[in-house]
Image 1 (cartoon, one colour):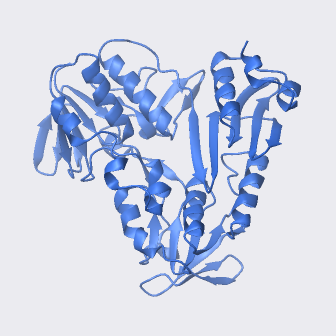
Image 2 (cartoon, helix red, strand yellow):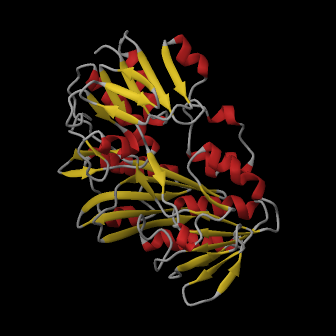
Image 3 (cartoon, one colour):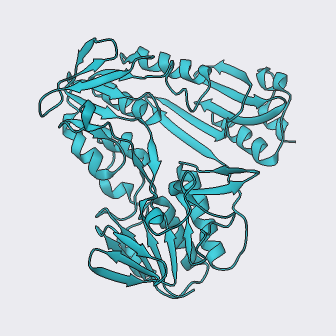
Length: 401
């Protein structure tokens, strides 16, 4: 296997290099990251870190000493500019680094608003990197006016932080409801009510015409002409996979870097894992944007580099923290045609996604038992009678038998 070079220093990369060493790879490993920080957790950026409840070091997945002790060379703050697959060389500007095996864990990048609608004004932010959040942190002062463009999980998490810090928050969502792309109406209703109770204004079916201001944003003009004031703006309108290097190197792209079931690209010396990779799974081609997938696929690719020849079988799970609510999601809800509600009981409620008689996914709000049981059922391929799920007298654990 020789020298293994990993491009992209995120969760997938950290999991992969640690697994390679655990499996006995003794040759050189080089981990290259464009950011100056060692691999760190991204989910707390829009939650605990933005709130000031976490120091930067607590975000690190492992301290720099781990990489030193395991003879993993970190090349941080070194953006890769090109890959030459024929010569098996990675270029970082004028510097050339050879590899025997290359792994792309290039993650994803946030979508930006075009300059034509004010996306280049000062005071307009996205949430993806430590630098992004460090840049916006000083804006979070009680009484200031924040406009969030996009009612997905990132936007809603930022709204929750801002509301807790005493800001005046407005969320703009072009679709008829928040979370429309990723969740059932029941989940949308739950979080709309939660945010409204905390004073957040949610404007659905509301398009943005443009942001206002000469050099710095001062407001937003909505579709239809109404204007609202803003001291700063956060854009949360999704992410796109980091495929630029792979595409320029001639690798196949299909909603991400296309891999086989083992994580290998069309080039036998190049692999991919995490947010940037699309892979076959149960008759579909998936690209998953989640910590769970980054960890699991990173480790699976490490095993396959070491010769396991084991197809990657994804078991999707996700989470979101907003105010005192912890949302946990198991499975993928694509194609559902029925929602079964369990609860509410105290502050816990869960929504179970079915397609016909088949359980696809579960959204559990402050209900870790429903999440754990639902996740196990989906992994086991079991679909309980929806009536049993809805019946509060049913002990969920009994459904696993």
